[in-house]
Image (cartoon, rainbow, N blue to C red):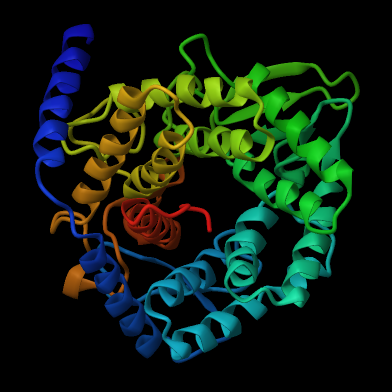
Length: 399
């Protein structure tokens, strides 16, 4: 196994060098995304539901309502497409689909996914329109998310329903790191200091309890609700309790990079790099991970394009915080390598489906959405492309 990992690391580095010598046209890829968005909008006859995924054998979107945890990604995709094209028709659709999610700001928290749902949609909407009603809604939703915080534990409860369904106590999943961005943002845009404090405490507790000595992540950590002490780390969507589930590790890379941006605490920047290394050091030759790095049938395991898209976007941001020029360049080059692979015929949906990407893995243990096109893969892909375009133009990637 040790020699196998070394082999693939060397192959990946050789591929990375070749990639860095070939210019990637980010505008062509964004034009492709716009074409696919137009195809999807033409297909979506009902604009009260949102597209989530497309099976490997299907050609049309499976639709979900605003309560689905992925509901914010499609409006977010439309906002990124509008940012590139300045097409008013896309903006109208982005507003329409975004406003479907308004009830999430008016009801009690069902689980931690409010950040995915509301900040990917309304967050991008406010960034591009400065509509103050959107700002107010985000702050209100952040207050709702904060109700799931347990001060004894120091984290936000991820899945309240699992307390009843599985007998779990307080549970926190790695995905929850992404939802902290909404809390940070809200605290600076009309919300209370408590939102910032909760986000920092959640990140610190997660940093302390959610990782093994090699900086690979557990998917789930269970805590004693009364004492706040960690009970155990485990998986829910990975191969095993001791494996590195690709998308879980990608949430960690993205999440701690974002935490550094919002706090400028050096421990978060250091930790973002530590959790990045086991991911990028074990990537296969094309830079797109298998769904779990420890899955037993590699190379005959499903890939997860969504994890690659998340990490590519994160690495573009992380590269801007690194003082060492060589390391910063390394992170950027790896991101470009992954984006280039995702933009190849192997991973693009092309004419076969109206999505952007193929080959994502949703929930392998449940045999759900295996080798599918999935909206969050598309969201982080177009986000990564948008960030790369700004980076190439010398702009702030977050403007």
